[in-house]
Structures are given as C-alpha cells and as structure tokens.
Amino acid sequence: MLMTNLWTKIGLVNRSIGSIYDLRWDYGQDPSASMPSLLLVKFDEYKGPAFPHCDVGIIPVFPVTRQFEFKGIACSRT
Image (tube, rainbow, N blue to C red; front, side, top):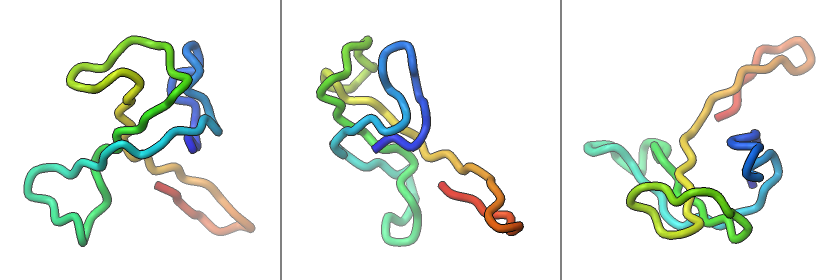
C-alpha cells in the first residue's frame, strides 16, 4: 500500500494497493543489513506511461523518510 501520493493525476495516491514485483539494492549494499534502495511494484489499475526497463504496470518506488511529531516526541518513518 502506498503511504503517500506519488502521482495523483494518474491514480498513484495514498492507499493505492499494489504487489511487490522485485526489490533492488545499490551495488555493494548488503541486503541482510540495509533497506532496498528501490521497490518495483505492480499496480493492476495503473494506466499511465511505461517506465524504462519495466514491464507494463510496474512502478519504481523509492524509500522516503518523513519526519513527524507524536505526543511531543520527534519521530521519523521510512
């Protein structure tokens, strides 16, 4: 599930449901010790343009860290 609006004009909005197609790490990253640097997500309802080197409906999603405050405590979520 998307947790942010990526591209509202074509429907990639907060709470859109997709399926993980693949996970990618940067060259040299240890997958057991670091988060993926890219998720490839399949959105069945996606009708936008194709992304280079991706199958139809596969969207690259990059991690984003958001800062917020909860009960007076500074927090972050990636």
